[in-house]
Image 1 (cartoon, rainbow, N blue to C red):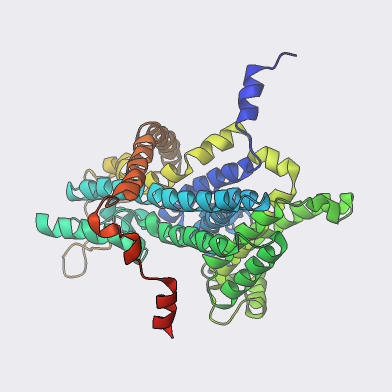
Image 2 (cartoon, rainbow, N blue to C red):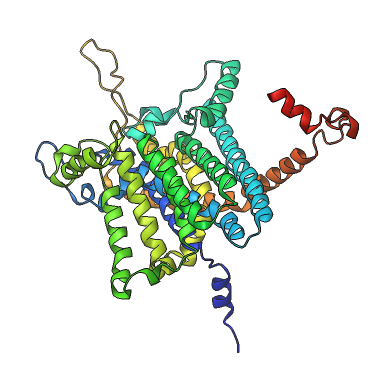
Length: 456
C-alpha cells in the first residue's frame, strides 16, 4: 500500500500531546494581540463605555479575549504542567522508576536553561537598542502599552551596565524587566517547572491513584493560599497529564460525554473574558464578580483567578474531545506552537521599535506638542496615530514581518541556544569531577553509625 508523503509527514508530527503545541501557539498569538489592543484600542479594557453603558462587539464576552493577555498566560502555565509531567508519569506507570527520575532530572535542567539563555539574549539586544536610542520615539507616541514599556536610556555607560545586570537578574528574582516587559511571565514559568520537578520527585514511586489525590490536595492548597496564578495552573496541568492515561470516555454515556468538552471550553472562554477593571459596568461581569465572593478565597485577585479557572476548563475540555485535539494538531497550529516562545520573546522589542517607526515616524514630522497655560510644552501631548485604515494596513505588514523574524530566530538562534544548553550540561557533569577534595579513601568515610550517634 502506498502512502502519500504529505500525509505521512503530517502524521509523523502528530503526537498524543500535539494539541498542547497547537493551543500554545494560539495563546502566544493572542498575547501579541492583547498588547496590540493595549496600544491602539485601550477602550476595550472595560466591558462597556461608562458614559452610555453600551458595549461594542470586542468588549463583550468571548470577543474581548483579544485583550485578555493574562488568560493566555494562564494557558501557558497549565500546558507547562501537562507537558512536563507526561514523560516521567508514563515511565513511572510502566514501573521504570529509575528512567522516570533520569528523565525528570534531565528535563528539569534543560528546560530551565532553554528559558534563561534566550531570555538573556533578548534582554541584551533590547538593552543595546535602548542605549542606541531606538525606543525614544516610543516614549512620545499616543499608544499606551508602547509608551509605558519603552525604557529610558541610561545616563552613562557604567549606569547602562548596572541597568543591564539589574534587569537580567530582575527577570528571575522579582519578575520585572524594563527592556522586555512581557518577560514578567518567565518567573511564574520557572517556578512552575520547579513545582513539577519537586512534586514528581516526591511521588514518582507512588501509585497513580495516590499521585492523583496528592496533586488534587496540592491544587486545593494553592487555591486556598492565593497561589492562583502558578500553583493552581501547574497542578491542574499535572492532573490532566495523569488523567490522560485513563479511558475517560468509558465513565459516562457516550452522547453526554460528547457535549461536556464543548461546554467546558465555552464556559472557560466565558470566564476568561472577565475584565481586569470596571467589572461593575455590565450585568455579566457583575454576576461573575458576585460569584467570586463565594468561590474564591478572601483577598484573591479575582481577574487572575478567573483567568486560571477558565484556562483549566479550556484545557480539560480540549483533552476530552478527540475532534478538538485533531483540530489543534493542524500543521499550521503546530508550526505556530513551535515558534510560540520566540514569538513571546521578540514581539515586545519589535513592537516598540519597528512598529512604532512604521506607525508614528511619518506623523512625527512637523508635530509640535501642545502648550500649557504657562507657555511650556505639555509632556502629556503625544504624537497621534494615523487613520484606522492606514493603521490596519501597517499592522498586517508588521505581523507578517514579526512571523518572519520569529521563523528566522527559530531557525538560526534556537539551535545555538540548544547547543549552549548542551555545553552547559556537559560542563555541569564534569566541573570539579577530578578535584582532590571530592574523593576520599574508603576508610576515611564517616560510618553511618557515627552519623546516627551525632544526630542523637
